[in-house]
Length: 223
Image (cartoon, rainbow, N blue to C red; front, side):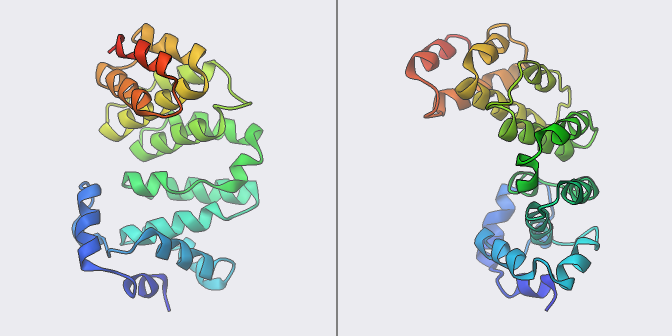
């Protein structure tokens, strides 16, 4: 069976209708209505066999779920160089936020030194979902022990006005307020973000269980 045939066998018209409301920027007819656990299962079933290798070389895909399976397969590649090459080949074809957000390559967590230059390049891209993916990788991998204050400036300096980029910037700063409060709150106090992004970052931080009540109270005064 092809990946499409495997996906089609799991599709649901009702779930497709629901899913299409979450990703309004892609045509409804490109959605099969497959749930995420089924897509992850399919990726695991074909991992390491010829079908997966052939599928990864077939770009662009037609269906939303094919793109998700593609990224789930990439996320399981253990070699950093191979994984990074596959990500870079695929990012130009990412066309919606769920495909961008649901895959986190494990190889990237094991080699931050080589990942960081790639993130810097992705954030500087003109492609919306490449920028979003770069910011998400910076958020996932560099708000802990490997955090540096200048990374906040990388994200604050993004001037792509697309809604999905702005929401990612807000998500990044809300997470930074939870994990690196002292450094990140300065960007809120000085209103370094675009106004809508500024307000959304505060909203997300106030809604987060990881931000202290004292910090939430103060952030509310900065809306």
